[in-house]
Structures are given as structure tokens and as C-alpha cells.
Image (cartoon, rainbow, N blue to C red; front, side):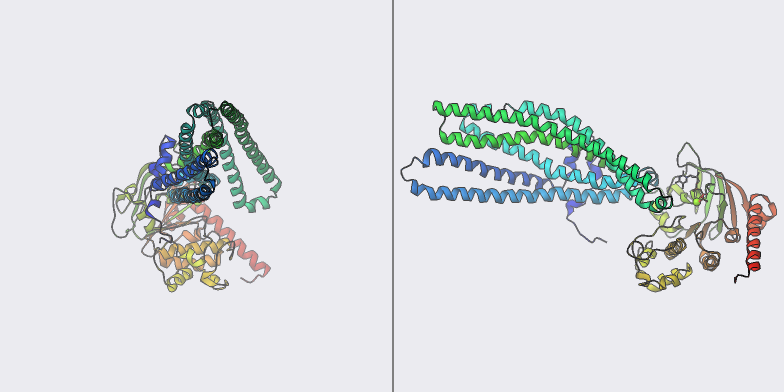
Length: 609
Ligand code: TTP
Ligand code: MG
């Protein structure tokens, strides 16, 4: 769905802007906006021409018109000339501003869209290692600095070049000697700016790093606010934030100092230049080699030419911030996307659901394997249960199936084809997963349930899925039913309710392979029983992976795998495992004893069951 159809220029693969030469990178990033960019500079140039012409008109007015006998006749057209020039200057300045805004805002708009899209295509491993706050900072503050580069510095370069050429040309036409005298400041200014460029770049890089750190602290504090409050660690968090914030202040101050150190020096140099120019020109007027009108024009033009020279220094220094932020943005863009549709094997139709693991090994960090020698076979439609102590690798096993992570050794095949040959998008459409930590968007319940379907869904279907997940009745009690918002502005769901909404979302997707990772851990035994009935019905005909801690939940599975420290230590059906003894039998006995005792306890106090 394209809610905001944008012109062609907005759809451009920014990956092509990746370049080690940052100026070249900026140039490429401007693809589609270049004519606007040059338009902005050209119109700005025209505005300056009109400004320059008005100084030449002053010269004419003082040196010639005032001396002319028919002054009264000349005055009106000269006055009109001034007004007309001012109007034209205003008009072209406006046009230039408009084109500049279109360029800078357009590039930034496209960059933000691209970054968003890019980030959601990066691998799980990238997201595991990259801090959320850091990514947010790069997408906001750094993109904004890049935007400023286009609105200020990129246009500034052209502007300086044009202002300089026009005014220098005018100066040359006035007096060659004076013109040359007016530009001897350029070499010292350029040398100084380059000297500051390196230092300011470093200062800005350090500042942005600290900014990212602060936004990470803030983001973590907000998402972990319950933990902070529960442990009454506000003071600790406050101290940490203040320390980080102070560091940002320190680096910001350092950056500003770098900047402000630059100004007085250039001001002195430029002031000396103006003084020298005015002095020499005044002597020339007294000597009679320069007319008074030319002197006045020179006075204006000199200021006009010193300004761009002075700005050139400022611009070079400012450009450093744009370059640093550009590099920080490019660092994300350079990251390879996870291909969604690519695959050596392009399957057609739906999966049947035969899954075979053979000596599979895997580790989030290649050095530290989490799964070792995992082998098992599931036939289409069978249910396999994964049981085991916490951290034994159950979630890791099922995360391999939708290719969230790539296994490092052995082979996994689905319907006979190697898993890594399947396109990820196909797998993710065929596999439904209820994750251990359910996540709901701050959207309506209905949107959350229909999230994975990708087509129009009737209310009846939504209700059927909610009923199967035993959440329909709860939703009915909400103020707006299925249209109730979840989160800040709507209802807050309990852990078990969230789990069931997520379950409904997965059931509605109607996947060929169903993965339930502790999907009923936050649900009471009674609700779990009612869900189990529905689930059993739903699991008919699909290959299902169920992770649970309660044996009650898994005992009917066709195959039960018991995990310990990343290995399968026991396997078989409930009956086989009961007969074999070992870990499974041990856990079963433990759980039955606890339940028996609980029942006795409840009976003895006389609580209604
Ligand atoms: P899991 O596969 O998450 O263990 P589990 O699902 O069996 O545990 P639980 O019952 O508590 O849900 O983790 C196995 C190991 O892998 C564990 O040592 C933590 C590690 N791990 C990572 O390093 N990175 C990850 O992203 C995950 C999920 C786990
Ligand atoms: Mg787990």
C-alpha cells in the first residue's frame, strides 16, 4: 500500500551512494535532485548578479547622474532601476530557497525511508549486536545533520563560488589592482579551515557517539521502566544518565570551542583585509586615481567578496559534521541485507512439512556452539515436543527453521530440500511461530490478529481464531471490542492475554509448520486446557513444534525430545520415555507430586475447585 505516492526521484537505491570518497558519496546521494540543486545555485547566482548590479548603479548615480545637467529626468529611471533590481533579487532568492528546500528535504526524506526499510531487512544477528538507541540516533540526529549538509553546505559551496566570481569580476572591472589586493586573504583562510576541519571532525564524531550512548540509555530506561521502579533504582539510573549527559555536554562544549576558536581568527584576518582595502582605496581617491562613485561601489563589493571568503572557512569546518554523520549513516547502509526472496530452490505451493535435522550444530557466536549434534525426523503432520531445562537450546532449535539464524554444521531439510536453499520469505510465510516473549503493536486488537495474513480477512475468521486461542470472550469485554487499541492509549493486556492474541495471530495465518515456544506459559492451567483442545484440532495436518515445561502439555506428541546443554539426551513417545526412566521420568514424577500435593492442600482447606 503506497499511502503517499512520491515522484520517481524518491525511489533510489541508496546502496549505490556507498563510497569511500565521501564527497562522491554525497554527489551520488543527490541522484534525482541534481537539477534542483544546480537550479538553486543558478537562481542564487542571479540574485547576486542583481545585487552586484545595484552597486554598479550606485557608482553611475554618484559619478555620472549627480553631475549630469538633466538630473531630474534621470532620477525616476534610476529609482525604478533600484526598485526593480531589489524585486528581482528578492524573487530569485526566494526561488533559490525553494529549490534548496526541495533538494535537502527530498534527500533527507528518501534517506529516512531507505534507512527504515534497510533496518528492517538486516539480520537478527545485526540487531542482536546493535543497540536500539544507537540505531534511532543514526536515523534521526545523523540523518538530520546530513540534511543540513544539503541545505546549507552543499548549496553554500555553489553560492560561495558564484558570489565570489561575480563580485570578483565586478571588482576587476572597477580596478584590477584593488581586486587582487582584496583576495590575498584566501590562502591563510583555507589553510586555517583545513587545520580546523580535522579537529572539528573528530570533536563531532565524539559528540555523536556520546549522543548515541545517551539515546540508548534513555531508550533502555523507558523500556525497562518497570525493572527500574521495582528495584527502586531511580537514583542509580539518574546518576548514570547525568554522567552520560555531562559527558555529552563536555564534548558539545569542546566542539563549540573548536568552532568558536575559528571565528575570531578569521574575523581578524578579514577585518585587516577590509581595513587595508578601504585604506588603499581612500588614498587612491585622494590621489585622484579613483572616483568617489567607484570608491563607494568598491566599499560594497569588498564586503560582498569578503563574506564568501569568510564563509568558505566556516563551510569547510561545518562540512566536517556532515561528513561524520554521513559516515555514521553509511555504516548502517553498508550492512548487507538479509535476502528475502533469493534461494537456490524456488518451491511452489505449500510445504508438506517433513523436517529432518541431521547432526546440526549452531552458535550465535561461532566460537561458542549452543546446539551440538541435533538429529531427529518429523513426518508431515506430526507433533514434536521439545522439553528441557532453561538455556538448553530449545528456542535456538526452532529459530533455525524460519532461517532467523543460519546453522553452522550438519543439515536440515524440509520436504527433502536443504533449508538454506529455501527463500526466507517463503519459509516465513509457511511457518507460524508464537514466540516466547509475545509482542503486540500499539494498534487495534484486530490489526494485531490479522497482522500476518496479508489479505482482507472477514470478521468471522478473526473471531474463529480468537475463539481457538480462548481470547474471544476477553476481547468482547473491551470497550471497542476488536477495535480496541493495545498499549498506551488503549487497554493494557496481561501476559497471558497477550500470549493468546499472538496465538490467534499465528492460527489465522494458517501455517503449514506451527511453532509454539512456551506459548501457554503465562496461562493458567484451566485456560491452557481449553486452548489445548483447540490446538489439538488445529495441529491436525500440520507439522508442529511445541516447547513447554509442563509434561501435561507435551505428553501426546508423536515425538518428545529432551534437551540438556544443547544436546538431545532422550527421545521417544511419552510411554517410551516413562518406561526408560531418566530425566523425563524424573520431571514427570516431580510435576505429578506437586500437583497431587496441591490438590490435597486445596481439598483440606476446602477451597472450591
Ligand atoms: P535458548 O535456545 O534460548 O534456550 P531455551 O529456549 O532452551 O531456554 P528457555 O527454556 O529459558 O527458553 O538458549 C540457549 C543458549 O543460547 C543460552 O545459553 C543462551 C544463548 N542465546 C544467545 O546467545 N543468543 C540468543 O539470542 C538466544 C535466544 C540464546
Ligand atoms: Mg526458550
